[in-house]
Length: 148
Image (cartoon, rainbow, N blue to C red; front, top):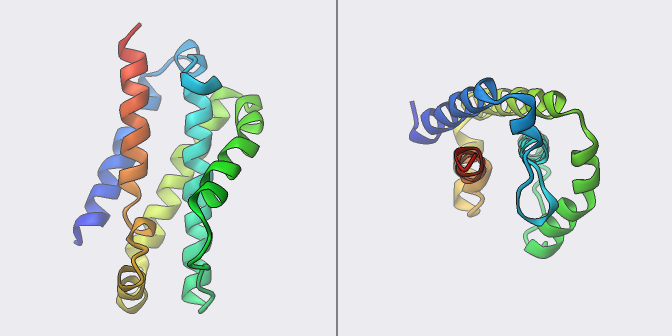
């Protein structure tokens, strides 16, 4: 098993454990910038689903553009979707995060070696290494919930 597959699985298990241990007030807990724990979970769900779709397109030969600036690709999307993420019921946001992570992990694990190598060569390994994004936000959530 490749390292990123195992680490993605570990991050998914950690996500499930954090959500299982959280009560509704935990999920409603405010974070910096007007976010909540549940909004962060919805954010994780969105980005995992987005990557899942990108991988599907990649396999069909539809490569994402190289020149999309980060502020456009990431910040604008996050800022635009934050109100929707905040409006989601907290348990729905949690379920979306778990389901999206599981679906993406399965897709990454089933990705053919040729496509995976092409993604790495193009310096797009972040599409395969989803544990990094999940872990960054799980660290933030655990810190916030630990401060109670």
